[in-house]
Amino acid sequence: MSNPGLYGVDEFAAIINPPQSAIAVGAGKPGPAVVDGELRVATQLTLVLSVDHRATEGALAAQWMAALVTALEEPLRLVA
Image 1 (tube, rainbow, N blue to C red):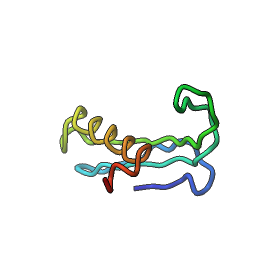
Image 2: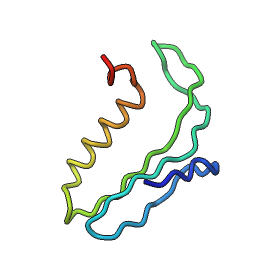
Image 3: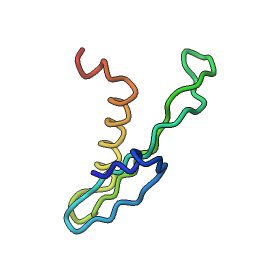
Image 4: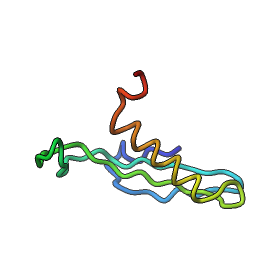
């Protein structure tokens, strides 16, 4: 896992060596978001997942990434 967001980097392409996979997290920055039907300012960041298709299928990686996004957007679901 790389976290170039600590240095203000928005996006980062992680280099992987078979059969590794990697995730990069960009900097959190204010941006527009719809919350309860209203436009508000919210912290947004970029997540990048690099996957070796010899290690796993791309669809499975996409499902994992969607679950990670849900966990980040709704953290109380993890403890409910």
